[in-house]
Length: 165
Length: 332
Image (cartoon, chains in turn orange, purple):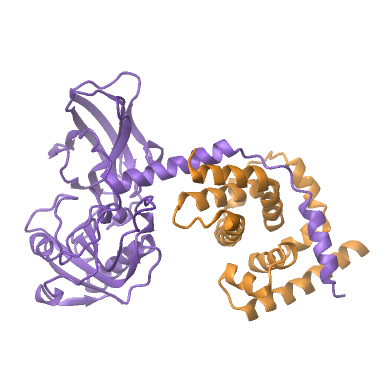
């Protein structure tokens, strides 16, 4: 087995669930979270020069996930205009999504923009300092602070209204 | 009402726990990575045809830019069994030798093509599989063919000539200045089994006469150049310049002439970019070697079809200044 295969196997089997949870907070959807983790792992390991030392591989994959999520959200915005026309009429909801649909925190996260959401997940779930969040997203620290402030206000309002209603 | 950070962290952790277990397997992931890596390796190592999308392959077989092009990475793999082709499209017959250039056919959007492809297997080895299909600039096995027009996977192709009749309709929406390729993937067994792929023909939609205003040309060339830049790790060029000349003069300046067939008198644009380019996408690089780098990136683009005929990477500018060939177009 090549070294990259071993590193991929270690990461996918040992940290796959953790990566999935991270992706789930970003997407708010179980199937999309699976896709996001897989795509990030594949991208990380198909570019040998970019795969860092094993210890940093997980952080690298998480960074790829965040950027894929933001790029994907951008594309989905364009798609959303025609998506309803393509959707089959008798779609059966995924049981995992039925659970997540009723989670107030996930509902609050869905109300955020993709960048705000990524900031919240990186800062408060992954516990990255603001400077590192800024580095992952390729924006300034001030921008991250602004996103976080806006996101916190919106999440607070959503949670509050969910709990009172 | 503000929310405390501690509460937010706790609620995020609770929500994250709602995620189901991963539904992917390590084997699936490794398989996907392996396929992509294999595709890139083949593209870097053996493919001679160049498009702007697959400019990587051109740099793996570097052109001489003032004799300073980067050496190809690592030790070359053993050469694949070279198949030769004769491609006939709507009555136009062109030969594509095993190590020769892909051929360009001009087509119209929506045109129905009938192609006859004669594949000659030189022997002594039989080919265990062969696919012919249409690609859009990226070669990554027959999975990247859309559609696969012919597949021979059950009975080995023995040494000798084999004939395939293919039919394909050029997409009605294929824009002028764009192209698709007829590509081949083939596999063999033996002491050193393997597979390989290449492009054998380009189907290019030319720009309509009258739509070749200097502004339109500049826009097309700039788009192609910037697309090539994204392959070179997104390095931002300091400048992009182009000049209209002939194929023979362009190859005299930057070398090449082996990737896609061009007649000496064909009108082309020679595009030159300056920047810091690193060709990570050219394929996996052995740990003992470095990815090809260079400060000058060149491309020879057919003036009628805007197919990229050649591309190269080097550290020094071409020995002949571009402005000696004609008026310069500044694309940055």
